Amino acid sequence: MLSPKIILITGCSSGFGLLAAARLASRGHKVYATMRDIRKKEYLEVEVTARGGAGNLTILPLDVSKPDTIKAAINTIISKDGVIDVLINNAGFGIGGFFEDLSESDWRAQYDVNFFGVLNVTREVLPIMRPRRRGLIINISSMAAFSGSPAFSAYSSSKFALEGFSECLYMELQPLGINVALVEPGSYRTKIFEDNARYAAGFFNTQSPYFSWSQQLKRIVDNHIRDNNRNPEEVAVVLEDLINSPWPSFRNIIGFKSRLRYWFVRLIPFKLYAWMVARILPANV
Ligand SMILES: NC(=O)c1ccc[n+]([C@@H]2O[C@H](COP(=O)([O-])OP(=O)(O)OC[C@H]3O[C@@H](n4cnc5c(N)ncnc54)[C@H](OP(=O)(O)O)[C@@H]3O)[C@@H](O)[C@H]2O)c1
View 1 (cartoon, rainbow, N blue to C red):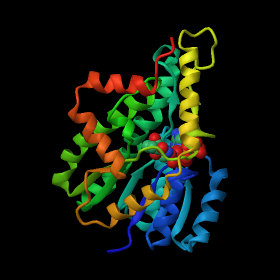
View 2: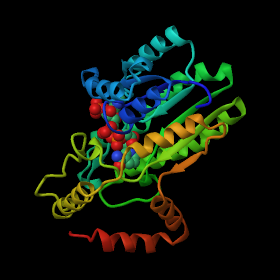
View 3: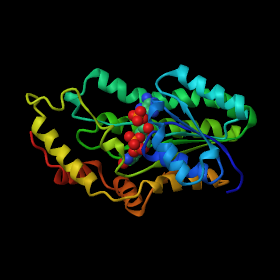
View 4: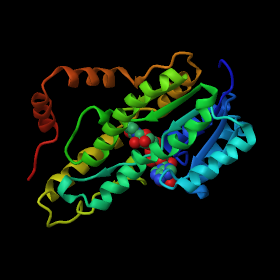
């Protein structure tokens, strides 16, 4: 580690956020781990204590879709430490379902967290980073930001939007000495696929023209996740490396297979890619 940093992370009640908070605190960084429901803090407390980093960790309430909670958390950090060196926009979730099964409120809920939530927190942190002409903003994107698939339009497009926003923000902030980076994990078995999984308003409606197909896709995804043994700590390791690096990479795709897929999708015509997806996830309508 070059020097300890003051780090704000969103969505630390489980998954990547929890692991990153515990890892970074145990490596000597001062971590403000936030979560929208503070009653879930015990899991993180147990993890960070086991790693010996409890003294470097403060847990604060923050819901990325509620600006008041963002302001309150940031005021607390500033009153204690005066600065924020690193922001990790990690909070997110996914709604599964075909476009015609997704309601207007499904779409808004998805974007309120995965896209506008990132904007909300970044908007409050930038005035703290800008005068110091230093800082790092890391947005947790996804491999779903590079390629679509059936029944994932809400989640996938929210991450496509996040990528576009991050590219523009990088260019706006680079001259001010502030770095922006994306981390693009493939699939890991976290609560996003289990307790936190959400489904379109019409996903379980037997009258939906997509019912058979969506239930079939759900079985495929559930099986894929059940057999997934990738260690989510890999994401925390990438975050730690980025924070410690004097020249953090902009795009950070984790693992050889994911990097291969990224380039493959870019090199082949879209219709060929869609044909291949249809072989793996056959239509059932
Ligand atoms: N796991 C994967 O395969 C995968 C792959 C690519 C990208 N990602 C991305 O990685 C990030 C973390 O996901 P994960 O896999 O670690 O899933 P997770 O275990 O479900 O964690 C998601 C976290 O986001 C929080 N969250 C949801 N809505 C929030 C809100 N309005 N305000 C604040 N926090 C909120 C959740 O809090 P609650 O407990 O209160 O719901 C939880 O702490 C997400 O952005 C996700 O899209 C995950």
